[in-house]
View 1 (cartoon, rainbow, N blue to C red):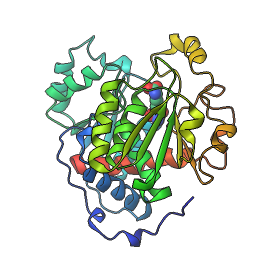
View 2: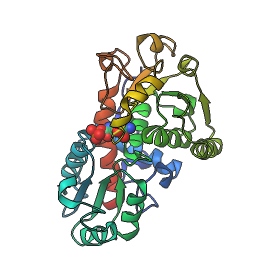
View 3: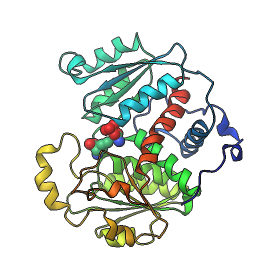
View 4: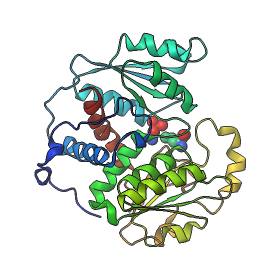
Length: 323
Ligand code: CP
Ligand code: NVA
């Protein structure tokens, strides 16, 4: 595992605010590979440099959440405060988006008060609709399709630990879900080799695999789909997993536990990866399912660095979108 390079090594363009060409951040694919690179470098600079600039002074960020959260909510609140802005958290009970009030009306009303809407939802289409009607930037804080803020932090963590992502193989073991989808696009954009091993019925869709493969081809990377987790982790530099039943799929938990048997990331599986491989998980973890109890404290685990990097990556993102 590499030590964190000194910030003084990075005196290039990423020392300044990153310019990005998208108004909203709904998918990893909204950003060009160079923009992702800029943001993760900026995140590293923000992590290692004392921050005195307050680019969000006078700005307000609304956190509109339909699902529970620890990391996303807290890291966005702290990121906004660190940059001099204010945050308002709106719980599912308060707004009733799409029920009490139409998505388009929520988008237009909220845009009159705040400078950015960070939205965690079920249906990705609601996020797209919110962005269509909002006059301010909308950030995807997790939808059923993607978790792009997680991927930014994940790439920042991989960059911190390994530096040259183009020579890095990432093995994702488990469900072809929102986290896997964003990660596939992110790894492809960075020219990495992205392998995914999922049981039948839980793969990334052909459409997503194709799109990721196209991005990978354009950036010198590769996308590989496998069934066997042991083959997938062979010589991998990063082993990544996520829960078998995501938020909203609790009623399928039993069926999924059956389907995902053999897909647990545990010390035996880690043994098959590269000796200096790191273990990543977006969290929360479900012990006894995708990982055994205590596995987050495995010597190769970087999951809490990864959780911390949500803060730095989102600071870079907020600065770029509304700073
Ligand atoms: N990883 C992540 O998004 O965590 P939360 O659900 O706690 O926000
Ligand atoms: N796939 C998980 C990620 C949680 C951060 C879910 O959607 O619940």
